[in-house]
Image (cartoon, rainbow, N blue to C red):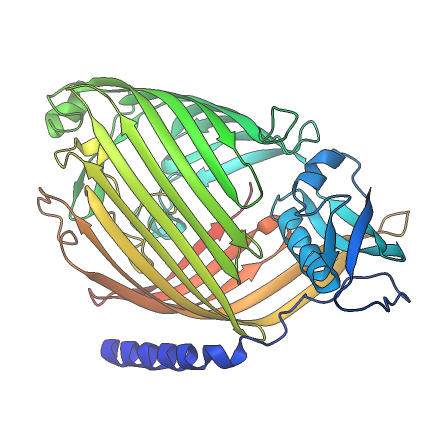
Length: 483
């Protein structure tokens, strides 16, 4: 059964790749020539048209310059007609990727001779969300439900205040007040632009918390926890300030400085003397980092066309007691093969130097969004590792529902898109001292089938049935949301 599945996947993957080129010229859903109804431009194909005015409507909160910042054209620019069409499509894509708008129309409003006026019409999202918070602390829903028996002791609860676009400049404020498993306070503020040229930005992060339970080691590629109902076993404080530079549209530079403090009880050190190295119960260290990101995607939360890449380098510690230089790369490539059918590749790699890192800085695969499908029940610690994910998906249900009709005749538009998919993963994690962790220092493979459901405010549910080389299989649920 296991080898039959992989043979089927390889044959199907090869068939799609061999036939992809013949579909490259197909019409991509949602693309067209945006223009005013009833208007035709009867001019030579080689004629240059001047963009005279750019009119923006629908932006009750968002400042006009924030919208204009995402456009790859400005008043006074001259383009061929076919280039204007491409500019309109790119502008709509960029504006939707800001996560500020439910819908965007970029179209030709009017023209006079070789002068054209452009209409940018946006439908803004809701930006203020004071919402209750309830979430298991485990890495994924299956681990909490199956391995932890849905224990309420492993749940964080509280309230989150999310104010996206707080001043109309795409500047979110986030405040989390959490209790339960971890008593925690998180505050962050992002200001994309602090200069008149709209190129430099400033971000701020602060978090502190404490917990009665701590992950003190990894045994059999499973996190080992210690809990004490009478005292807190660990506490932490993290602060970061980050400058961003975005000269054009697709590329962003981030320069950051952070300071981190963490304490654990002596019981944790007794169980794992290498937790901080040197049998210390306390560590504090600065961090310097730089991140370069590039996005050219049709829709960042669920891309079906385009490319993205990220390069990150950080230096933590800067002392003999703790020093870690880390380099990480991520990549994403997405191709539209034929109508509503897509091929995607995802890759990740990371290395930490020197290789003799303490336990708390060895986490690699299985944490946060860095994981391999089929290994959701495991963590794979190490100092170097990578993975490659390949998937084929087809959109087979699209629902555009209108609900909650208002007095002005407008209604809330709630789209639902459902994709079916097949996928495969392969990866490797190096650990110079793996102990009894059997998934390190070997090639790992997995694959499966699944369904993705995408709806309003970028909320995505992923239901996946996976197989891995250990002979294990199971149904896993993942979700991703702005909340």
